[in-house]
Amino acid sequence: MFVKLEDFFSAKECREWISWAEQRQPDRITAIGEHMTRQHYTVESPQLEQAVEEIVQRIVQRPIWWNGAGQLFEDPPGWIIEEHRDTSPNMCVNFQVYLTGGVPTLGTVARINGAQVLAEYAPGSGYVLVDPHKISHGMIKPVPPGHVRWSYYASWRFTEQAEEIW
Image (cartoon, rainbow, N blue to C red; front, side):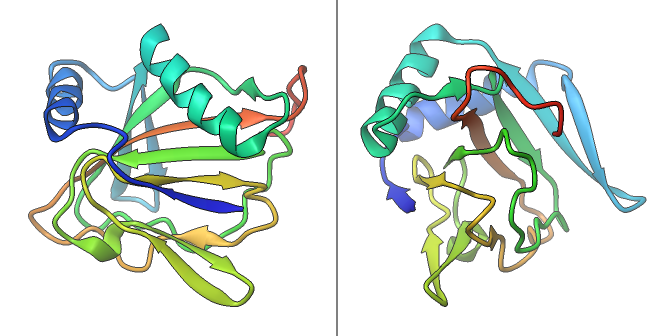
């Protein structure tokens, strides 16, 4: 199931989250290849977590457990997440909301019954993806020069105990 979201954050909230991250050092860096990295900023906000989980619970309608605090992702020019299926059994529900916009095709595409469905890349918009190990999803194009793709991401599992495979 791929559910598109709109207006989860206001434009002001999007700017505030980016400003918050820019004042910190990243908690983690993910590399793709030799020269491409994504910065991760851990967000520990009970108020935000409650708002996100309420939306996800309404969609999923079954017990879920967080896979850890949500993250702000800072994706630099050239960054792309190719179409894929998640492989960890812990990745049962993904939630991503974009904080920046301007290039609609930088959103996430899911392949549903052979058709591509795009969660448009606009501030406050995003998606909830249930069973990401069954549904192919990713970006169509890399982040263009002069642009940074910011988003908030969180995930859940359907089991109380996490599997060791991440």
